[in-house]
Picture 1 (cartoon, rainbow, N blue to C red):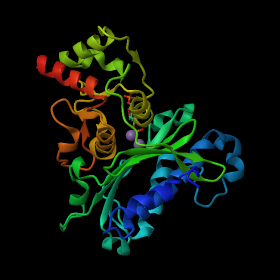
Picture 2 (cartoon, protein in one colour; picture 1 turned 90 degrees about the vertical axis):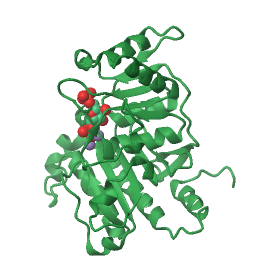
Picture 3 (tube, rainbow, N blue to C red; picture 1 turned 120 degrees about the vertical axis):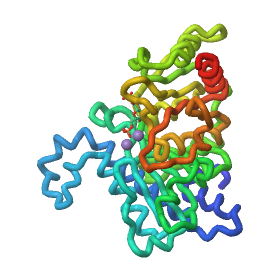
Picture 4 (tube, helix red, strand yellow; picture 1 turned 180 degrees about the vertical axis):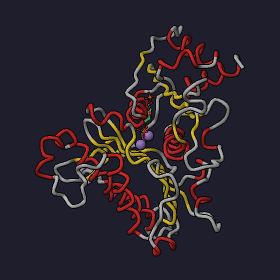
Length: 330
Ligand code: AHG
Ligand code: MN
Ligand code: MN
């Protein structure tokens, strides 16, 4: 019995039992996110067949096969969460304003933020993409947006799903990070990566170096330092999907950077609510660090739903070095 695989559902139930006050609402939300992830995973896997199968499926009254996968994923997340009645406020990278919820959801005690499909420019070329989410407790306020504009350090839970060579669900509730791999034959996520810890330092740096000429001196000098590191030879990896670049660095160690530059991304490119905060909570729970170059990401007070932030996260050593360089070259 002890060798039986641990499903995500069983794991979540066991976690829930550790909290005497828990009534199961939170577990229902997570279960529903995992459910949406399975549906998104299925669609992502057959994305390449859409043109081949399109003529037979084009009669689908919902037109779903024609829909862009990121919009499809957005709908699946909302369809999974709203009927639970537990989610009082929701915001998504794909929706400009607050997402309207049904009347029964107004009784919910939680707020959820998500990037339904991260790395979507990679869909057409069969590269790993993902879903990112974060869950907050509702705050007492007339305005539901206030529940979504909480500091990342208030997150109760954050996670991501990677649609890679396998589909994986990785999440934390502030008590370590655990990863589950989808076994498609039974349709369940099974515990495969228990208590993930990011190495103290790594050999990978991930940054889009095409922005080099537009970086501040401190960033340029940092990258030069990493490339000519006295103790080890680093290697560069850039997939262009945060989920995939982050997941690799979490397991192997190293640093991911999407910094500010003087032209296109004056405040970075990644979004604080849907990307930076959930990943920062996860990396800290795994023993790593996350910063915007000036302060801890999780301490930033968001002021709008779609604000961007520079994001530097990964192993402790590389992130601390980044801060040293930024300070030295101000
Ligand atoms: P999204 O597909 O959700 O808009 O996010 C894309 C993001 C992120 O996943 C990735 O790290 C970054 O964009 C890549 O940006 P560049 O194309 O500038 O390298
Ligand atoms: Mn994204
Ligand atoms: Mn996206």
